[in-house]
Image (cartoon, rainbow, N blue to C red):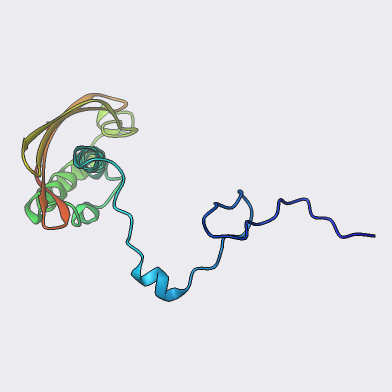
Length: 160
């Protein structure tokens, strides 16, 4: 009885792509080290917009007590992280004093970006205004992102 396979055969040359679910050709380690790394997808504006959007939502989550402020340290200036932390502590104290059914407990939960406007100020500098809505209210967030060397940095962040 002949041996049959239900998978299509793997291509024999490296110039054709393998079908999904099949083995890819082996790449030697030396080739892996010398191969150029793919850059981040999208244009500079798209990358800045994605970062701004993610940091703005994360900042609102910090104020909700759902995320520690130090998680933003990688992308935001230390002053911004400290200010968010102090504000989150104040909100946490206020929530502790209010009854469980008070509106303050619903603020900043289930946050989503309703609208955003991103503008290029200069080469490598973008400013954005976002409206972030949650269960209890809508908030305005203003962010400024600057490209420094090879990474983006949030230099201004205001949550209204």
